[in-house]
Image (tube, rainbow, N blue to C red; front, side, top):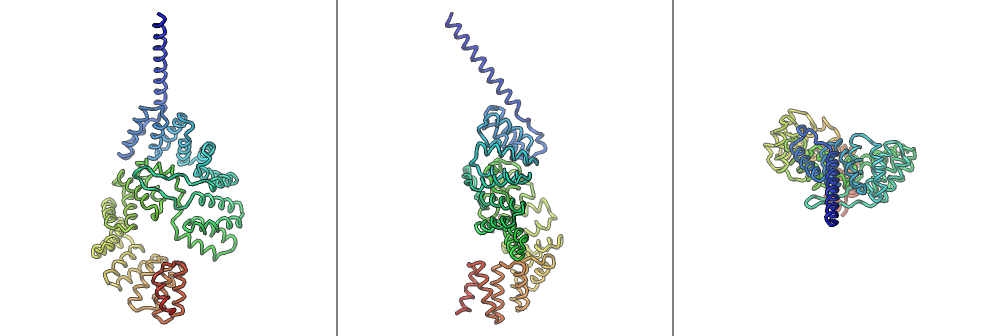
Length: 480
């Protein structure tokens, strides 16, 4: 009887434990956010969220499984449900700071700077080595006018190591164009400027710009410092350099890259691609845009951006296919027609190219279309007509450097050396560090017999760009 009594007690205990476990699962399942009305979202987003929601409801006490649902909501731009979901993931595993980090990002997308600051403070308390959290904390503190706290956070970010960027299998690496320490240093210069320490800002920014010459925002801020110090010529010089660099983009946080890999939203993927440079990170940018096309094949903006990227990479046949699809969706957009014309021109299909470009010019009299038409006409040997198109481009945009440069080259071919020299000097007024323009001007001056001035231009070209082979050859000939 004693053995039966013990067995019964054990069975009852097991039943009670099982019941308690089921109750906890039911309670955890009830706390999961309900799916939104998916009719308002794309098919890809609907399938994505249904799949993640079903898996989370099957295992609602796993922080990893629930966190995957949170990431799906976040990456698909459904921030309210993402926030609620992250709260549950944090409760399931308080030691995993990534859910706090992501919740703070989602809350900041809805305009809460205080929530971003509070979340990042929690993250750095448990993960003090994760530099991007310090950088984001500095951004939040700066926006709230807490400059001392911002500077302290940025100093911590400045001394932090770059986080690991090893990508999951089959996805490209998103390499660092500008390191975290440079963004943090820029933040310290911003603090110095806003507090009136202009000389301190200059002392921070000059070494930064020397170390990272592609970091346009640092040059632009240095230009502001120089202007406040009365150094107008130096200000113009560094701002001109900034204008030649990529537009400002936020630091490439690997946590955000994970969202991009999770996302099925063409809007989010397009936003992320827009912040990526097309140089070293062209594979990552293309990966994002290809995913966007896959999930939303009728989004004209995505087709246009992917076409533009592939054209910049010299893959004109692939770009042409995308622009033709774009033109079917937006038939009267002159930019799309112009891109088709340019692709056809680069593919040597000049007659077709001219037809598309003239249609584009009829829809909108813009400088780029006339420039592209000038390029095609030049390749067709119709130099006089090409000159007319370059002139029309410059009437609409006098600062269009490539149009003015091509105009000068065609004028040389027509024997109008004096006018060609004037156009190239105008290019150098707009862009003093244009090595190609210095080379071309040197060649024109040499033809005019102005050899000393030609030598000066070739030397300037090589100072700016030692790889200017034409300038090097011409200089060697003139200095023999």
